[in-house]
Amino acid sequence: MKVEFIDFSEQYHTIKAEIDVGLKKVFEKGNFILGQEAKDFENEFAKYCETKYAVGVNSGTDALYLAVSALDIDVGDEVILPTFTFIATALCISYTGAKPVFVDVEEDTYNLDPKKLKAAITKRTKAIIPVHIYGQSANMKEILSIARKHNLKVIEDAAQAHGATYKGKRVGSLGDVACFSFYPTKSLGAFGDAGMIVTNDDKTYKKCLMLRDYGREGRYEHKIKGYNSRLDTVQAVVLSAKLKRLDEWNRMRNKNVSHYCELLAGEKDIKLPKIKKDRTHVFQTFAVRVRNRDKICEAMNQQGISVLIHYPIPLHLQEAYKDLGYKKGDFPIAELTANEIISLPMYPHMKKAQIEYVCHTLKRLVKTYRT
Ligand SMILES: *Cc1c(COP(=O)(O)O)cnc(C)c1O
Image 1 (cartoon, rainbow, N blue to C red):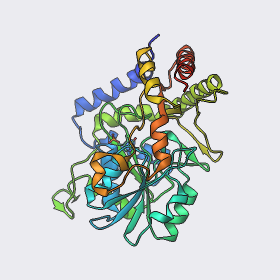
Image 2: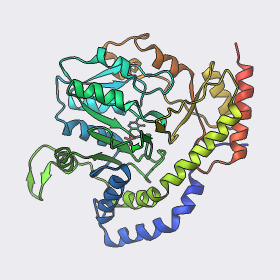
Image 3: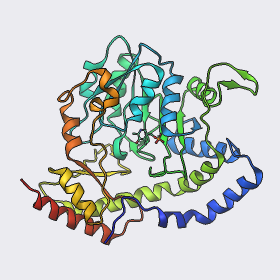
C-alpha cells in the first residue's frame, strides 16, 4: 500500500464546482489583485479568527515580515522566538535588521517554553513570536503576562494552526497581531502562495495595509517605503471555498488522530502528541517521537509511506544563523526533539486502512531498530 504524506485530491472534489464558478468570474472580470473576492475573504477570515481586521498578503513569510515591520521593530532591536520552528519565523526578524533571540521549547507540546522567556529578555527586546507548532496553541496566558510586564509586543505565528483554540478563543485573536500562511500544504491552503495578517489594533491594521501596497495611502501618495505583497483574487476564491469547510476538515483530522493514537497507544517507544486541556489541536502535522528516527524514516519511505521531519535542525544550529554564535547543547529540549520527531501522513480524507498500515509498519520498524 502507498500512503502519501498529504493527498488533497478527494478534498478538491468537494469544492471543485464552487471554485470553478468563482474562478470563471474572476477570469472574466480581470480583477486579479485585491479584487472584491479578496476583500470578502479578508472579512470572512477576520470573522473566523474573531478579530476586527485581516490583511491579505503574498505568503506567510510576508505576513510575518509586515507584522514585525508594522510594530516598528528595527535595527538594534531583539525579538524572542522558539528555536524549534520553520525558519520563516526567524527570517522575518532578520529582514528588519533586528536580532532573533532563540529560546527552548516545552518537552510535551514543543511550543515556546514561557519559563525560559525571562532569561532571554534584555533592554533591547521589543517583541515575542510564539509559534503554535503543529496546530496547537502555545501557552499564551504565561507568554502574554510576561510580555505585558516587560512592555513587549506579541506576534502569533499561526501558520500551522488555522482554527485552533486556546481557552475557548481562536488563535490569531490572542496576541497583538497574528500571521497565517496559506501555503498549499497548510490545513487552509491556496493554489499557490498566500498569507494573512489579523489584528484588533487599528494602527497596526492601517500600517499593514500600506506596507503590502507600496506604502500607499490613496492612489498616488506614498507615506512609507512599502512592499508589493498583496493577496491575489484567484487565491481568495479558493480560500473562501475552503474556509467554509475548515472546521469540518479539522474535525476529520482529529478523528484520524484518535484512530492513530488508539493503534499506537501502549507502545512505550513511540511518544504521542500531548493535547493540553485548555486548547484544541488542529493537527496540521501529526508528529510522534521515536528513537533511531533516521533509520525508521528511511524504512517507512521505502515501504511506500511518505514521512517527513518537522524539523531536523533547530534554528540556532542552522548555518544561516551561525553569525549569532549559538552552539550545540544550548537548547537541549529542541535538539532532542529534532533528533526524534517524525511527521506521519495526515490529511482530512485519509482512509482508516491507510492509518492502520502506517501504524502497523511503524510499530514493526520501532521493534526492528530498538537498541
Ligand atoms: C509555513 C510556515 C511559515 C511560512 O509561510 P509561507 O506561506 O510558506 O511563507 C511561517 N511559519 C511557520 C511556523 C510555518 O509553518
